[in-house]
Length: 202
Ligand code: URA
Image (cartoon, rainbow, N blue to C red; front, side, top):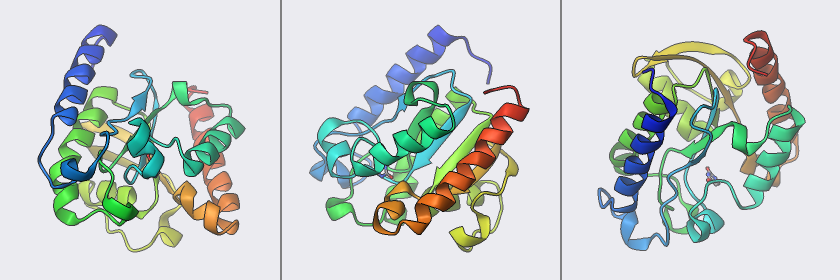
């Protein structure tokens, strides 16, 4: 979809308002704030995580806790700031205790993510972890087995009429528990950096 910036801003404002009023699943009862997503509406790179955690729920913004601090560092290592990308999640509301998203929550919530993808129309999507990776794989008709098989690879896909390169990597939270993941995410992001340079985006 080719849309001028002021139309995109209006459509995104409407979408955020819908998310704020959403009661499509039970998570609205326990959330403090929904976390719609944030960043540049002209971003060529979109990052998609899993769901808000404790601090995201408190602040209503994606990736502002410990995993977010690491994500900021990883992005700046490839010359990008948060303001240049768009960051969203599979779920817009925090699952209690940070449990995994339930299939019915994913079904209820992902139409919002789909609209964000259509609106931003990114050239590259980086999925952070297995939940967002399996979501995009299934949309593209690809089989997803495990992150170890797919991370750091470039999948040229078309989803919702938008063609982009999908590059899965591990969730930054995994690097907080096991440092070996940090190196792997860094390597995967260098693949992203090379692609963005080749496409004249960086
Ligand atoms: N983890 C996620 O997947 N998303 C966030 O916004 C924060 C932590």
